Image 1 (cartoon, rainbow, N blue to C red):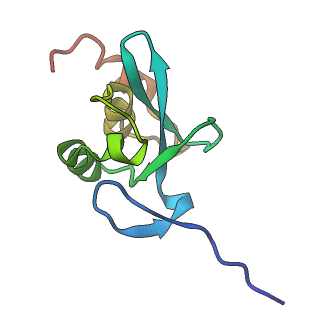
Image 2 (image 1 turned 135 degrees about the vertical axis):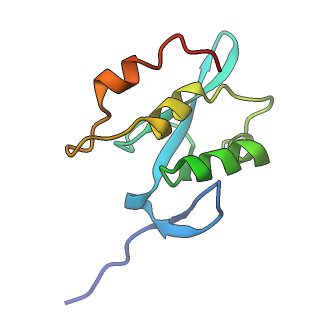
Image 3 (image 1 turned 90 degrees about the vertical axis):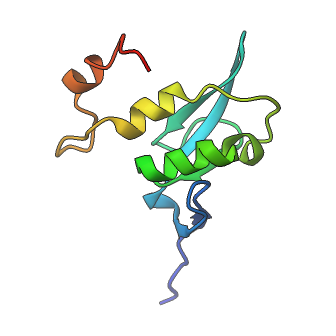
Length: 110
């Protein structure tokens, strides 16, 4: 029986390699103001993707290094608000974000 290798990707924040199943895929979606970043936990959205550990420390490193723009081949600075909410949202035992906690963040000053 032949064992298949699992795909590995590099985190844009900490630059460590990990199995793709452990990383969060981020895609850029174009809108009227430029580009905004969207988390793609199901790994099904079309387009080029950047991979990152779902950890606030890796997210902060990626933002500081402007890694999303390079990884996704974007010009300008993309809006990363949706990814910040996804990474900072606590998860329940089902793996889904706790909706009550996510809704409480709306309208907070940054």
